[in-house]
Amino acid sequence: AQSVAQPEDQVNVAEGNPLTVKCTYSVSGNPYLFWYVQYPNRGLQFLLKYITGDNLVKGSYGFEAEFNKSQTSFHLKKPSALVSDSALYFCAVRDGADSNYQLIWGAGTKLIIKP
Amino acid sequence: DVKVTQSSRYLVKRTGEKVFLECVQDMDHENMFWYRQDPGLGLRLIYFSYDVKMKEKGDIPEGYSVSREKKERFSLILESASTNQTSMYLCASRLYREGGTEAFFGQGTRLTVV
Image (cartoon, rainbow over all chains, first blue to last red; front, side):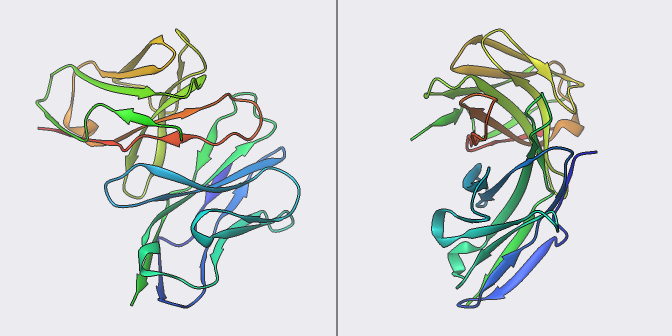
């Protein structure tokens, strides 16, 4: 069955430190992977995606993510966290073998950056 | 930039009322979606539409219906609102279903049913 797991409900990081928000997935075909961010009382904003090619993907606001096929992971990273990065982060996957082309969503990880 | 606009940011409705949530996108996207978001549950797909007058049930369609008479507009209807439909509702659009195109979201409608 298709699934996405974000194993941490919340991640706390000090400002200036590197941050990682974890995501693992399970699909039957090739995965299309996405990260979105949601600021309080707002909709979701697209951050970055992996479709094919280089395993390291760079996105908005200095974020990047690394596709690891053997570990079925797509962790979101940033070298130096800002207080303004505090938000809810969602990982999503589309199964390339799924003719419905639907996104499967993780439950979200709340990122808190402390000054 | 793509703009997806939901008609209301906040709504309070009474149990049993018929509720309409409207969503408009301005980039000629083929696909449109309605999700509800609840804490700890992520996003759950209610209905989606691949094109005008087309609709497909998502994971939790019970108690909801949709309408897509024009390409840019996708409406979610709560036939008889209940308190368990209190939630954040998110509309999204996507250029087309093939490939890896990303979805764009509206700002959300926080619905409270009392």
